[in-house]
Length: 211
Image (cartoon, rainbow, N blue to C red; front, side, top):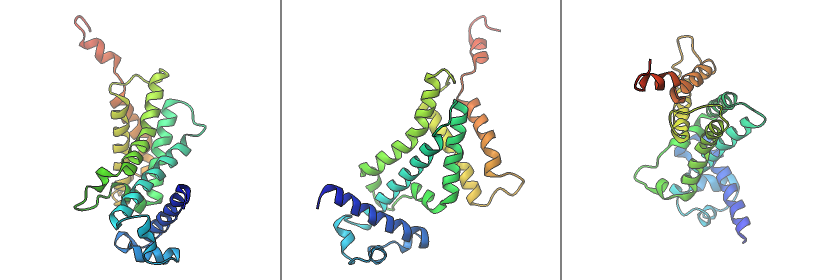
């Protein structure tokens, strides 16, 4: 079997695993259920994943790749730093709310396992997903559309933290006082910009002899 065939089969197994997971939850995921979904023998998935932990770690990587793709697609044709930042935030939140179980999988940790730290596949997927935001912010800075008070990586972490907070509140049903995820996104972007953008007046006032 060629490398391409192996990878294709792995993807089929991950498709089946995601289907089982989203239908019935994490506890329902087993090699037996996945094999039944694929219509193959119980032992077949073991040829591609050595354990359930390894399978779930690969599934987590796929969840990060899904979020990465959602954000990249949202950026297509969007110009202007603030517009691109808003598109990223909305894409993140919309994707998470449309597939909350898949989103939760991104932050799921296997108990008593360091596989997440050792998995190059998962580490790369996490990095590349966040890097979509980091690159948008870095490009805005390079184009002179924003002067940052922190580095782009820090700013992208703050963007994810804000978006994650909105998603968590929405999923938990905590918006009960006239607010919504959609309504809060523009304000979140404004707050983020105030937090990451350098304040020229503050810098002048801090200099000796400044007003």
